[in-house]
Length: 113
Image (tube, rainbow, N blue to C red; front, side):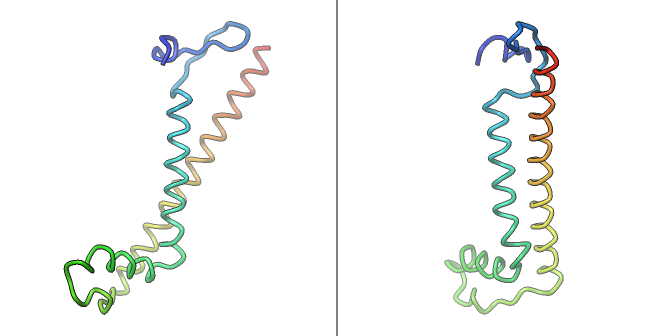
């Protein structure tokens, strides 16, 4: 990372500097994590019982003989669905914020030209 980016400053085409909260690599990492949040939240939001069964098989299967026979309680299914919907909403909100930040950067670049 360059000295200017480490200090939180970035020069635009006109040579003016403005504050940068995150480097480009950090922003890409945030977008990747937000997409991962959406991708892992969707199955739980749409199919919570199937997600629970798969998790039980993967996590409890090596230890218990009857992991496939376990039935989750209704409150747990609702909690998994709610948590998964929260993950999806957080991911979408994060992507929207990132997009909004890019739009603001574009507008600032146009105003400085």
